[in-house]
Amino acid sequence: MITFLVSIVLLIVGYFTYGKYVEKVFGHNEKRPTPAYVNQDGVDYVPMSTPKNSLIQLLNIAGTGPVFGPIAGALYGPAAFIWIVVGCIFAGAVHDYLTGMISIRNKGAHLPALASKYLGVAMKHVVNIFALLLLLLVGTVFVTSPAMLISNLFDGKVALAVIVGVIFAYYIFATLLPIDKIIGRLYPYFGALLIFSALGIGVVLVFTGAPIPELSFENMHPGLLPIFPMLFFTITCGALSGFHATQTPIISRTTQKEGQGRKIFYGMMIAEGIIAMIWAAAAMSIFNGPVGLNEILAAGGPAGVVSEISIATLGAVGGTLAILGVVVLPITSGDTAFRAARMIIADYFKFSQAKILSRLWIAIPLFVLSFALTRIDFNILWRYFSWANGVTAVIALWVGAMYLFLKKSNHWIATVPATFMTSMVFVYIIYEPTMGFGMELTESYILGTVATLIVVAMFFATAFKKRGTNFLLDEDVSGYKVHEG
Image 1: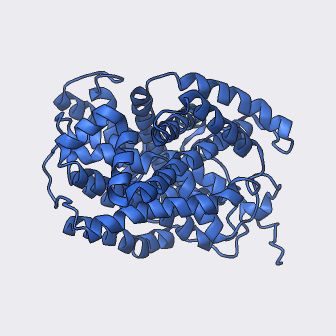
Image 2 (image 1 turned 90 degrees about the horizontal axis):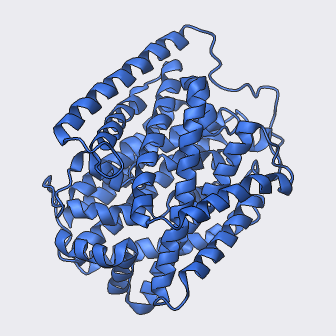
Image 3 (image 1 turned 90 degrees about the vertical axis):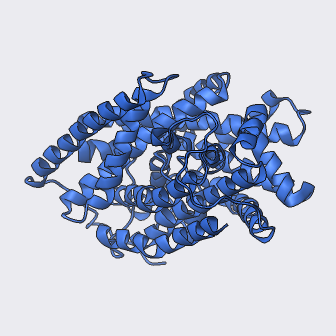
């Protein structure tokens, strides 16, 4: 299991080396007051400690993505390890850090407002549509997936509709109440379960000498699906996820100092990458290769695989706790997905959220739409979620690239991953037969490359034009001083 262990080490080293470099390129300012103080309202803008913010950020971003995605991605073989490590360090963590820090510099603004400011007003409407679509799909997927896991845990003795109803009830309270009332209080306990499930399975894999395959660039997928672009939309959370760009502004509004950003945003993405590595390794080693894994996926879906892995590695009691840890992941992302959707709509229409009734009028239609979407097949939902997730990640990376370009810093740390993922987004939608245009792979590569070059040319044309103006890079907060104590 050399590849697996080296990959874990590389992720940790990446945080202390490349993460520090990204922080230096951005240029954090410890003396600049953050939105938690400037906009403090007791609901969404509430100063919280670094440990609490870090744990909430991890649970916000780590839905079933770093579990279900890597399990499905394991069908490709060790190529999945490469994408998790490279994607997490050079794309995903950069994406999360820049999104969080740029939001802090703009009074906790969400991605649509940031896209409007840095990429043009027209992008605000485009991003609003994609962000709300993504959050609605995320909220729905993260109702359905934990409900399936809980149903498996009770051997189907509790009706799925009842479980879905209970999860929705929790989401309503978490969406409406101040962030420190439910999310801030419950997440430390949820975090303990999450850490137990991931580390427990990881430790067992190492100490039992599980047959985790070594590095190989061979595509082992039984269905012969192409690694480019399919792998990058199978494993999203754990490598690069646009959903995170909708979550980081939640914590940008509760961060006390800019210097805490690397731990909270970059560091928690690395932690999610480690979780993804463990589940991918477990899926590769326990089912005798991709064919065996594919059979289990066909029979019980990702939820069935999670149950099999948890019980096989940790026994009945430990396995049940591990499954509960995985249940926690989507629930703690689903609640903040709906919360982020509420905040984006409120920001867009300039609705005050001080009164609970104002929050309720926005939240109710979201929950009604989401409940309707739970009637759609989970696999179809996941495909649409994956593509919308990729598009949102691309937009967020281009926002980061523009910010650094205008700041005259090393924008390539965002421009390179943005360019690569832009090409994958185009190739995927051109190639994908179910929800895309279903064209041949070679044609998809050619058309995707041409479309990407057009996007890159448009980016640099806009960037050079903006650089020559009196563009206000950061919101002015010079008139505010943080009161100590």
